[in-house]
Length: 402
Image 1 (tube, rainbow, N blue to C red):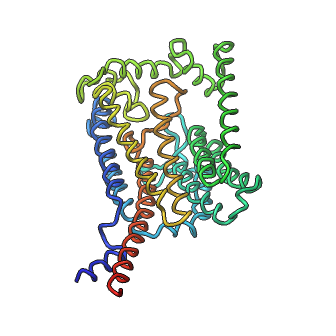
Image 2: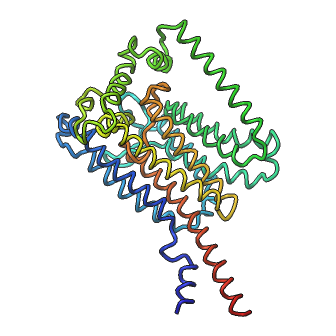
């Protein structure tokens, strides 16, 4: 009887997910829904077109539930399917972003044309597909070129694949922050796969030094600009002098963080969310967390994200093959970078980017595609468990024979 049960489990039965990863994701989503309601209720009920304090909560709860179900379904599928579908996903992501710019399906929201209509009032951001496309195409290409990755031509090929999707995100959806994330995913996976790291470190340090020098020069010489993105940089460097260009939102976010103290004002007691911080449920939700739950709440969120990244690291380290390692590494880079960028914006460490906090900020498309990435990681983890069970079964068989 025990042998039959072991065979059934080894065949991929229930009970061999990475429950730690799944649990931390569900906790983050649940926490995000609570904070989303707290941050958005006043604005939603004050909007005459909505007039429902639970509008954002109900929509996000629906997408989150669908996302968790999607993750579980994807985790049951052999992740090697991505090898065959990687080129198709890559091309579809490019075409979807082009459709935003060149077809009537493209939709403009808050002055930005970044969405596709998919039926009725539902929309999606195709740039989110581009992130998954890069996560699967880069490992696929690395597996195809093999040792040629050690050559400059091989590295440039991988970087070029990321650059094409990043360029499409910028050119077709005017989304620079997403383009940066897409490019960073490609570079991050190459960095992990490449046997030599010295060259990457030198390039990174050189680019960082040039960026710092450029920012010092801009801060010292420039007070105004006709460029939208340059005005964002100025609003970051001199927020009190650029209140109309984003400085106001940044300052109000800092006021929210500073007024929270260690334990915060209490859940639901934020004052900055009362139309002071526009659309606080989006990329500025971390400031509301700090105001209502204080430094304690902020540290708790960072611990949850840290544990999520730790589980992804463990899965990548123990993946049964290189393709699984590189896929999960790409997911790790994506989540880590998005968390870092969002929190750095809220703390005014970098210019505003519009990057949301994963699993916490409002955004249906974002949570669905993030959940599909979690499903891929769970699928890799499931193969690790399968191999462990098979090894255990063979050891037991050998012991009995001896």
